[in-house]
Image (tube, rainbow, N blue to C red; front, side, top):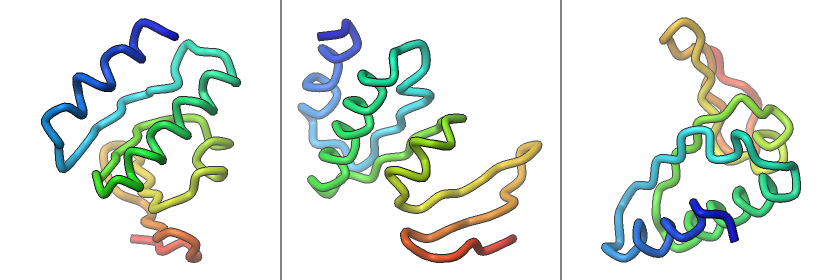
Length: 88
């Protein structure tokens, strides 16, 4: 288990309404990246809002929920889960 994996039980112990994961798959191998995203998906299924910040397009498409794309600090698209792109 990675050292950051020990933080999850502690982070969820107080039943947060929101979890922000900033580049949770950065600097880990593809297998561990998949496991991390599956963990965040399970957290979401518990009714906790999960915000994932990532540059990994493959994972975004695989775990597509709502996808908000930013460019130079501005929202340029907002795609609801399983819907076509909505340009802003």
